[in-house]
Each structure stands twice: as C-alpha cells, then as structure tokens.
Image (cartoon, rainbow, N blue to C red; front, side, top):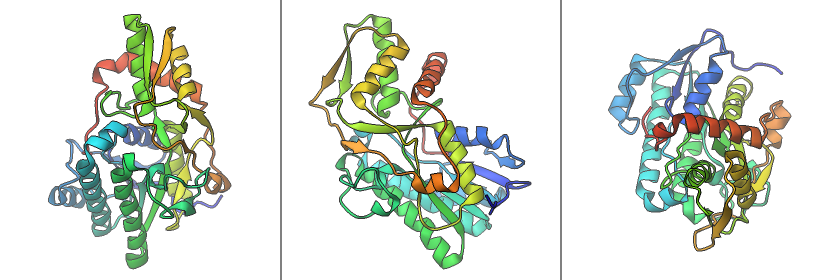
Length: 321
C-alpha cells in the first residue's frame, strides 16, 4: 500500500502519553524511525494558555490526540459536566494548537459510543448523527462528536491533514481498575480477583449479562492508529475494532476462569445494561489492509497478569498529558 505520510525522521507527540492508550501508542512508535516528544511533567490540556505554550516550545510533525477523561457507566452518569467540559477543552486546545504550530498531521481518537443507541449492527461509519445517543454515556459521546467535527472543519477551512478514528471498547495494561469509574472488563477482572482472594461465594455483575460487547486490546489499537497515520487521509471517520463480540455474561465467566475464581456469577438486573449490542463495522479499515490480531482470551490473560503485578497502582487516570 502507498504510504501517504512517512514517520521517518518525524517528531511525534502523543497527547495523553501517560494513559492506557497513550502508553500503547508510545510502545508501538518505539519500532518506528521517529522522535517521540515527551512532556517532563503533566500538562493540563484543559488550560489553553498552558497547552499552547507547551506545543509552541515542542512542535510536532504528527500528533496522536489520545488524551481524554474516560470512565464507565457510573462515572458518566455522576460526572456529566466533567465528561463534557473536560473533553471539549482538551480536544479544542490540542487541535487548535496543532494548527498554530504547523503540525503536518493529527490523529484524533473518538469512540464507538458516538453512534446512535439503536444504530444498525454492526455500526457503520455513516450511522453517525442518525439517531439519539445512549443516555448513559451521551455526555462523553457529544464531546467526541464535537472533536470529530472540529477535525473535519480544520481540514475543510485550513487544509489540515487531521483524521479521526473510532475505537471500540478497549482494555489492556495501565487500564483503570477503580470500581467506581472503570469500564466493564477491567472492573470484572478486579472483582473476580478480589472474590478469589476472599473465597467469596459469588461474583456480582452489573446488569442482566445479556448485552453484547466488542473488545480490542490496546496494543492492537496502537498498531491500527500508526497504520492510519501512514496510509489514511480523509475527513471520513474510520472504525477500529476486533470484529468479534461476546455477551457480558460470557465475558464474566471467561474472566472468572482466567482469574481462577470458582464461585457463582450473580447478575444484578437493577443495574443498567447500557446499549444492548455494540459492534463496529471494520470493513473500511480491513479494506485498507489492517486487521486485529490478538484473541480476547489471550489479551485478558495478559491484562490480568499486569493487574496482579500493578494492583496497587491501578487507579483512575487523569485528564492531563
């Protein structure tokens, strides 16, 4: 495939380098012939003056905008203003900062939650803005949709080579395992681990267990993002996913088996299920020549080993870079 953007000799900044996704991108870039720009201290990307000043002093050729305030259903439900405001500020400041400092390319990370609650499955990129969002994460989704349109508008008005990728549910090392704010997969890993240690009779799982979800290991995501930075240039968004789905119930059973928990799995139907099915259509990315490679069970096993080694440090991430 023709390479549209070469990383050779380029200066690359990963905004959000200390988060799960940012760290994975940095790991992936280590195999490329490029210079990775890193901030010595955390940058509050919500602060425009601070962000612009740092970007001016550290100009990059390529920027991966992976910084975001993220969390599961509970976090989105209890912190709607923070999820909307923080993410709007982060993406606006970094995207405008990229234009001001002359970045040749920017890759914006959206989310599969941008699609309507009742979008046809698997969700194609053209389903965006065709219906109401899932209420449990609409604040985050609105912010990400705004980021997509910001990238598109800068391409149209200023000729900036900014692209947007929409990853499915992610997991992997450096995930957030805080039970009040994490996503379902890391939360289940922690719950199963603690139930095993306590020899608990049951493992509680939110919801009915019937919703279907797709999961992608963060290292697969990083590889896809680097691939897109080299081979894609369009305002049209691109989905990134594994192409496989699993029910929350079977996910819980799989995690319990990997962890070695032998008690019962109990579903709490009083808790919200969220969208009943969420699978992205990866036909566009696959046609470009990229496919996910890590099986779910293998990825969960690796993530569990990382969690056991770093359990004391597995906390909610920040919104800074």
